[in-house]
Length: 278
Image (cartoon, rainbow, N blue to C red; front, side):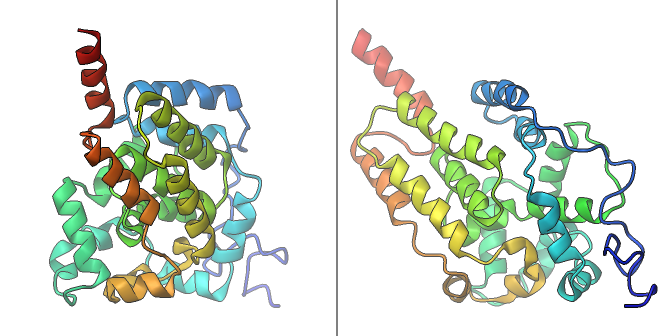
């Protein structure tokens, strides 16, 4: 291997000289009590997405940097960085995405984002609220890519933005890239939901299925998102080993049969408790 191929023999930089990890990037510190503090804040205000990113920061995975290295310093990773340097402009260009075939991942993604009033830029804005500095390194590119594919995971898996759907996507993500942050948010959040909403809905079966699905699916961060968007949604799900989320659907069926709106679980539970006490 020549010196022109990489900055150093231990593969710590890309061909263009971008370092794997910027020398000024602080070393990740494992802070479980801090993570729990932010988790409690998140339970009080579930729309405060910045707390999610703070939890991830407090529970770094020892396997994160090796995952970054394996992708970004490979020929495939180099090609991805060249063709997809930053995903939000691609994902938010609905005019271009709407020109792709009906039934495609792109059409489903636009439908989802427009229905929910979301944008990739909005997720970036939420992430920036943590005040975390950014660095010109491969870790940053990889981390942004993990963040920016979150809503695409909703579309591919079929999990909605209801409380259970978010827990399922978090555990799907853990199956893709294991970290204690995803475990805390996914399983602790699910147990909290089960405690707060008295129901026969099989919540734990739903989140376990999501966890298994994530582990069986090729890591989305390593796929060409441009190519994925062009594919037929059902064909993409088959290629990625993503099955119908039947236990999640069953939870919704049970809740509706019990008179509970799956998209307003906690508010309706409070109303039912007040009515029972009256």
